[in-house]
Length: 213
Image (tube, rainbow, N blue to C red; front, side, top):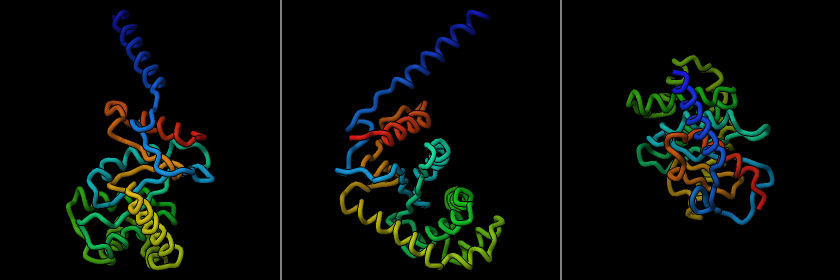
């Protein structure tokens, strides 16, 4: 029994060392998509509530957000090019997420919307449907009403659209989810170890945040 424990410990140590020794290579694990990096470190996730891959990626995104260095936040950018719903509904969902975020409940609101679309297989016909979803899940309806069409929220949604257009025109944003680090590095998820995806993802993002060239 003791020998088995030692062997298991050795195997675990070997795996840990392998993970820590991962060398990230341009063109394999990430792409350089701009000449200059942003002035401050940043991580942006381009996503859609209607994207099944984004729904499955959400737990990894949330975990990554909690592991980022101090002062760096994961900024979610909702896109409206997924054909599952009209652009006005997708814009309303982006604004609803921003309302939740402004109230310190961004992750909770995102989870509600993802669950409604992908687990309950339900649809939104208008902005009132979105409001109802949030309210029945204990989000303050008065807060929603006060903020959903406010200037900061509309400006935030417009900024998402501008970012979408910018990277789409450069043929960088070709699908979602997409992670962009420092406005310069686009991650290639398919090259990360599927058995240790969350840890390699965090290591790659940390590596790119610190990259100076």
